[in-house]
Length: 344
Image 1 (spheres, rainbow, N blue to C red):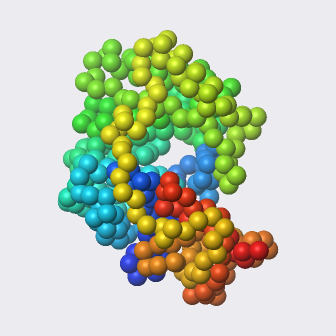
Image 2 (spheres, rainbow, N blue to C red):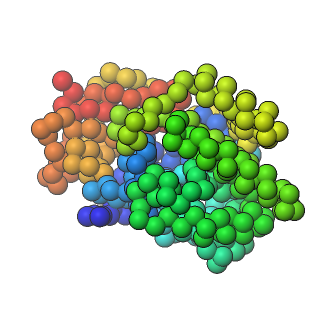
């Protein structure tokens, strides 16, 4: 499945910031997102980043990440910082996960370390290790309690819902806060969403000291992501209307926002005031995940994803080339940059 894996460290010449699928993402809050790996154990049919079958994958050095985190905290301020490990892939596949968490806690100002996972790689041993490392919270993507539907959604022959629920119960009994984060696919898992709510309520009735939050996500379709057949997103208004009905029915909070996680505005890192349609000189430093994608370097710290226009495809002799590309994504909301080449 995986043809190539690139290890990103200080000598790789790949900047840590600017590229959406690796490194460090800043959205102008007290949360810093880490994307340390692009490998995934699933190939979900709804994945908005098409994880699971990249031609080239990336693993980022934990030491390199730590160096970048320290620089960002200098700008944001060393207090109330949350680190959220949220790869375009599966967190538990990251080989330096334990070292990363341990190193992060040594940085002044970090108060929360959270991570995302599909949960299928959890074991009793892993849960105990994460608990011993004082992981604050884990967000588990669970869309159904039905084995057949889970297999269909995730594109796998065996999902193992019973094993996952056993491990979830162990996780919920630990000191780690748990958030169950199902995606609602209208017409596909309507009943399943309610069954997940009932499962969470049942944990309270069983006497668990804490029960998970549930953060139901709206199904979104992206141009470069996978799409479920005959499943169409609803409007945000309709989505929140349904959440309100479920809240009243089950007497459980379902509409979660930044305040529920202590997220607040904080100083943003610089993206050099770049704007959409600007033309910029950059140096190509690496291939990307696909044949028509590569990574450019603007400065030592700021990179940019470059989309190659057909019929152009990445070749190794492009490495080191200085090109002029047109920016097609840059905004005040985050530090993610994307360009197109050739620019015409």
